[in-house]
Length: 115
Length: 113
Image 1 (cartoon, helix red, strand yellow):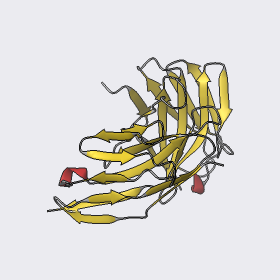
Image 2 (cartoon, chains in turn blue, green):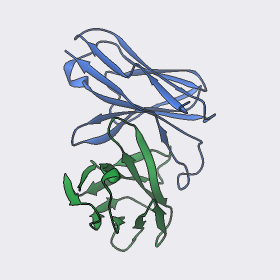
Image 3 (cartoon, chains in turn purple, orange):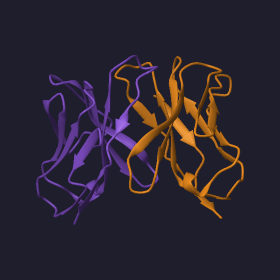
Image 4 (cartoon, helix red, strand yellow):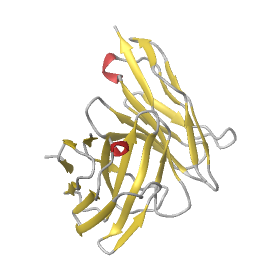
């Protein structure tokens, strides 16, 4: 079984709808991250969480919210989806070592299309 | 702020050709540097990393050396295979806290027979 799973893997929705993307991990890591990938732009950090009670905004948090329900679960919500949120979304986890040694492990991604 | 610049793709090579994908960075202090690979339809996987100047990261025949003087971390492989076809991302983890990764835009590699 995969260590970092994301559901759904693909989602098509309409403008104005509320969408939740879910991420679960079995690695026992404290830190979890949500990234967005757009063609030609690499990955951009949306939100990150150091533990259940510590959530931080990333580079592009506007229009998104998150919930850390447990150590193993980190959800990303789009309260009112808009077409420019069409992208590939990745969840990642890390152990939380020093910056020089911490490695992030990525889920398989969720492809979201907003019509 | 921190930034990573890598060569644009796509890069198309014949099998057994030599590969170089350039990556340069801007950061304060001494960041850690990473190469991640994304195979079609999959998430990113760590390929290799280096945590201090002159370190060489290596894995699966790929190598990259942390060059502080040129702020570079170029990815190389002596003989590519069709199975190496993927998107390669250079990234850094800076000293600013949070262990956040700053990614380059990715370079698509296509290896043909």
